[in-house]
Amino acid sequence: MPGSKSPTVTAALPRRRTSLPLLALGVTAADLLLVYGFLGQRFYPLNPVWVYLMLYAIAFGVYVYAAGRVVPALRKGNARAALPLILGGAALYRLAVVFAPPHLSTDIFLYIWDGRLINHGINPYHWAPNATPLRYLRDGVWNEAEYKSYQSIYMPVSQMVFALANALFGTNSVGYKFLYMLFDFGVIGLLLVVLKRLNRPLTQVIWYAWCPLPVTEVSLAGHQDIVGVFFLLAAFALAMRPKEQGQGKEQGQGKEQNRGWKYGGGVALLLAASVLTKGFALLLLPLFTRVHGRAFAVWAACGLLYLGMPLWVYLPQFLHGMHQYLENVHVNSGLFGWVNLGLSYITRHWHYVITENLSDAALLGVTYWSVRRPVADYADLLRRAFVVLAVTLLVIPTLFPWYLLWTIVFVPLLGRKPLYSFVLLSGLSALLYVYYYSMQAYWWVSAAEYGPFYALLAWEFWRARHARDDVQHSGRAGDGRAALGGAYL
Image 1 (tube, helix red, strand yellow):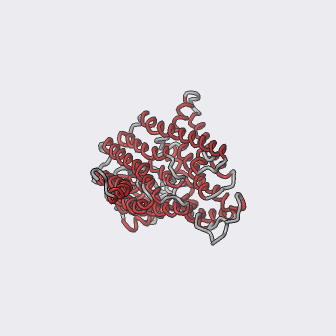
Image 2 (cartoon, one colour):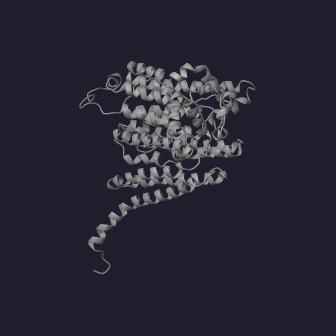
Image 3 (tube, one colour):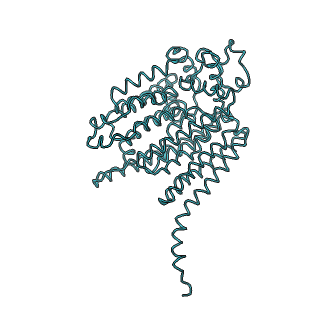
């Protein structure tokens, strides 16, 4: 009949509609590749700084649209096809910038310096880069490095990686970045393992894999925090390894369930390696001990003692360098800076000491909170670890963008939907580079970075608390996101 559609055309319309999200994902993947390809061609990405911030903002916007709108619209069949696209895009974005000069930050030159000292048989904790006995080693790497008067603050596992990279690549900074990029690939692989064991969609890995933060701070700038993040996530993956058939099914909650947790020795060694890369994971040791028991504590102590031997032997020198750094480097502090500024109007001389004590109290408080009740399941373990790390980063006096790698890696794991506040912070943290380029702190940078973050965090907390109350009143079991807002923050 005129105007009627044939059965073939009618049947094809829904199929075409279901393929649209997959097509949109391909388009966003291509857009991101163009952005990173252009960024990888810039010799000085921060000159001018507004160009870098514009490129980062474009990449962040496309990433949020792809992860927050396109991927949830995928049907089950398309989701399987989308995973290779997500992983392939993640690899191409990193490769697009890894060969660029590491002029986003100068930290990598300190890595190269320390690695070369170790391979020359020189203790990097004993001599600062500007020490007279090391004058014969000064070269272009030394000229590029900052903090030349500070003894090394990098921990033993980091130093091992520096020495390995120096043995493989010499002073070639691209080689160092390539090695860290491999660790980043390892993090993505471990995220897939953990997502599978949580029975979550594997496509949620996009919240980390396409995030501009690891692309720019690891593959472009070459920051070594990714090594500690890799070992931390490996500890979670091993802790979540399936038990033998039937084991633990009849176990109840609390202590009885915790006896069924396995692989405590391996988990302890991996967590010790993460701690000895960067100390953020140190506050997670009580939480894992709560889960695995005293045997875990023994294994962790042995791991810290053995892997940290260079640190314990030269502890006074390390502490001297750390004291120099902590006393002089206060950048992008956010909450710490606001509290310190407010107290400065009350007390002229003691405001910073009081703020430090409040920060320490917050760290002790969140550590106690994480262990005061038995851990219910693996999702609970992940949520508590995330809260401990998030509070740590938010109350310390310095928060560089690459520190947020320790929290953004949890974003795909906390629930069916991420905490958008921390996704937002990973985007707004790029504003720090306004300071790096001009070497001047602007008041509006802190307000623009942390104001929207805390506002969104408060809204998410309020919304999750109300969702949790509604679930309790209706008598149904709540999901992980409601629990995160209600009981875990």
